[in-house]
Amino acid sequence: MTRGMELKTARLTLLIDPAKKEAFERLCAQQDLTPSQVVRQMIRSYLAEHGMSYAPSGAAPHAAVGPVRATRGAGAAPAARRTAAPSAAPKKPRRR
Image (cartoon, rainbow, N blue to C red; front, top):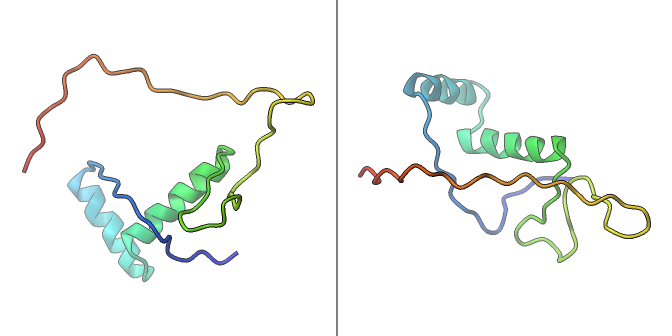
């Protein structure tokens, strides 16, 4: 399957050590890839590795990507879900 640009996108912001960011950007440039391309591929790999399927934006309604999980019924076990506990620490104000 050829992977093209998704029709819709969402922003993912993360904090990273400046030296690590610079090294990552240099490596991406050496491989003629953008950091965004590499991060998107890492996310697709991570989702596949953990058996998580998803429907890319703009895909046909039932065109899920990734392993198909068993649904409940006919002996299928319920899928385990991990949820993050709410943080008790107050949020820091955004820097501008």
